[in-house]
Length: 257
Image (cartoon, rainbow, N blue to C red; front, side, top):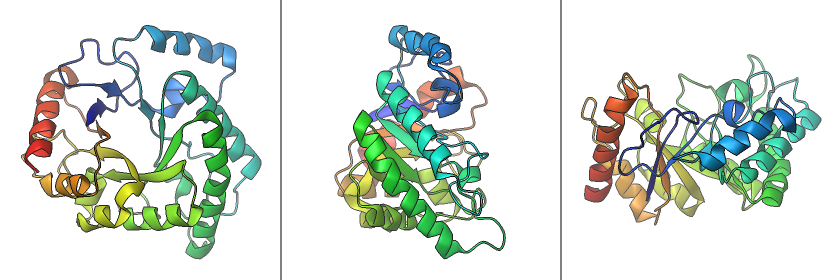
């Protein structure tokens, strides 16, 4: 298991023991709305960084909808192409597709149509991701954050419909815990899961902040053979002070699950 934290490049000046990677936002690291010349200094900074990115999140801006009446496949595919190419260039292997603003179903719009749209989009994104050797991980968000794809089961059903090896599932214990989603959905997703986020549901702090036990989720992950990356995606009150203890608690809960 590799442990990471969702922060921007350079935000962790002195990485604590047990931290293997960082997971920045697409907009800040890959700068997909900028030219390659603007991106070049960031790419150079990654090469000399003490702790490097292995995943990125917040794939799409809200201004680039994946569902609804204003979907623009040409613009979407161009964004995906730039993201995947630049991710590969800096050693990032996982692109997290949460992006609640981009996939929120507009009022009055057919949810069945939205589902067809997201599947069609992901069917196009899969080959683009494969060309760069990266994987897009579809993340379910809790129902307060988004009104579409709010369970791991939904994510897995969509990914099965897409049926492409570079389109997979992310399990987020924070979103699952917020909605009371049972660990069984992890078991049903099985080896479709390629990435994990975690945080406590109460306040979205790192594990150990209020003492939530997330071992049932970790046990389910171990039962399906997961041993990949887990990123702490948290609201930090004092990142330098909290990060080491958050990593230690995650390690403890994983080991004792």
